[in-house]
Amino acid sequence: MKTKKLGQSDLEVSAIGLGLMGMSPLYGQVNDEESIRTIQRALELGVTLLDTADVYGNGHNEQLLGKALKGRREQAVIASKFGFSPNFEGIFGHPDHVKESIDKSLKRLDVDYIDLYYQHRVDPNIPIEETVGAMADLVQAGKVRAIGLSEATPEQIRRAHATHPITALQTEYSLWSREVESEILPTVNELGISFVAYSPLSRGFLSGELSKFEDFEETDVRRGLPRFQPENFSKNVELVDKIKEMALEQNCTPSQLAIAWTMANGALPIPGTKRIKYLEENVGSLNVELTSEDLQRINAIMPNDAALGSRY
Image 1 (cartoon, rainbow, N blue to C red):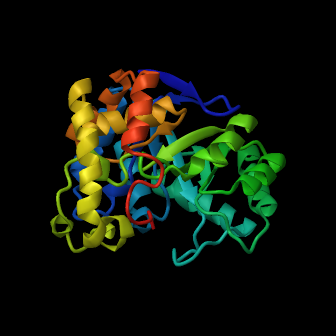
Image 2 (cartoon, helix red, strand yellow):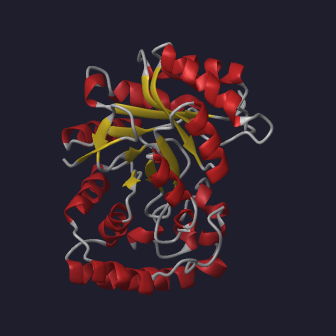
């Protein structure tokens, strides 16, 4: 397994991680036993960065990861997040809430510390220096090894980093969500902050396995996202078909091509899945080598803003 150092910390992680959000009931039905087997298979493959959050399943996701890591804690680099009010209805970054949230997460995970702790969303009503200052206290207390931000602006990143070193920034990044390329990526590269890409497959769309809106279960959150609406779906499938053609030529799957593209652009992707089959496929993206000509061709096929519909 290829590895990467996270920011300026002493954390070394696999070059691809595993996002656990879909293991809680957000994309339809879930199976905890299957999810636990998938997490444990990830560890067997050398995937060490496991990404969860307190808001996923209102605590269910962290509890699930805790069960999967029984007797395996030393093999994993746990990344979790806080940033929503106690009832998960709104963004909340008060320093007191930071310290309450970490204790609840540690209990659900059944661990003594979290390796990488993110502010899930920046609270516009509380100076980021106050929130990050409280997160820095967690590092001093030994409850957290490193801190990160998710979906922050360049200004917020700089202010936070001046308060305490930010190890990683996590933001959506894929062939269909490239907004970070203009300002975010240059900012984190300048500051020595690792960039972690969530949804590198655009919530499964870039896998090439989605054919129509009606296939989603009634409880699937994608039913409410603009990019997946019937009026956009068919046109977006046509774009993915072009990626499928190139993947066939590259002797890889569309998912592997899309994930390899994020890595070629300096990101550490954390594709989510709840099944071993797709986990193994995603890890196979590490074997896909893209030349500069390949990248130019992909950019021509899927230029910025090619997808119809916003991501939220």
